[in-house]
Structure formats: structure tokens, C-alpha cells
Length: 163
Image 1 (tube, one colour):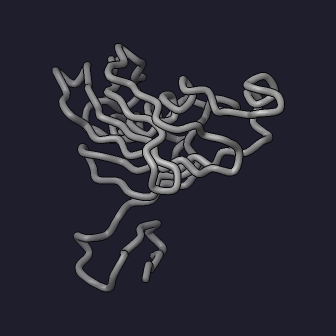
Image 2 (cartoon, rainbow, N blue to C red):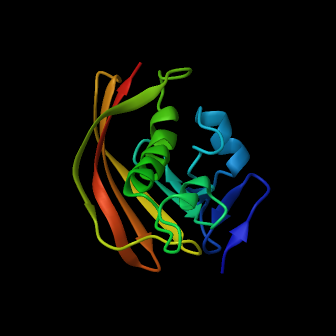
């Protein structure tokens, strides 16, 4: 049983406040990230552990502009957009770190990315991104995975730089 409180947190059981999970709405995500339609790829953050990890949701719909050409008659979400969605979830973690207010993180590298299953309209991507390390508050490395219905769709390591 989940209980949503007015502070916009979810408590999965009636227990101590330390077990509460922070939830970010799409409006709160837009306050953190510079992305806007059609490049904002995260609809909601459903779990957040400050400085460690975030779990985000992307609802994949047929109305998204990339499906007009990728591919007509058999729409598939491009892999680069799945990676971008994972990176945006990671961006929520990075933007909440002390000392980076107003900074902009961009990709510095992408390693070990693998695509395991196609993502199609109607799917819901659940992306989990964990911070692996931060160097001098200017560079970060994260591990990310995207799942659909509990099946791994994509995974990889994402590196960021603060500009």
C-alpha cells in the first residue's frame, strides 16, 4: 500500500520518515533540467536517493515525432533516445548535488551500451540510474538501465561533464 503525502513523497508502508521516497512531477523535472518538448524524455521520477540514484518513467506514445520516420508501419523508439532518457534521469541526480546550482551537465562519453529488446508505442520505460563516481564536481559517471515490463531494454555507462 502506497501513501502519497502533501510534501510530494511516497511512503510504501506506514513506517519511519527515513524510508520515504522523493517523487518529482514533470513540472519539477522541468525546473531541474533544461530540456523541453520534444526532447524532455522523462515523465516522472518515482524514486530518488540524494547523491546516489533515481528511477524515472517514460511513457512511450505513438504521438511522439520520431515515430513518423522510425519506422512507418513498425514504430521503434530509437536507441539513442532511450540512452538520452536514461541520461536525463541521471541529470536529476547530478542537478541535486551541492555546489552545481545553475550548472549544465552534458555527455562526456557513453560506454558499454547494449540494447536488449525493442521499445514500441504503449511501452512504459522504467529507467534506473546510479551514480558511480564524481570527480572534482565537474565529471560524473553513472550506470543506467531501462526496463519494460521487467525486461531489460537497454543498459550502459554514462559519463557527464559540468559546463
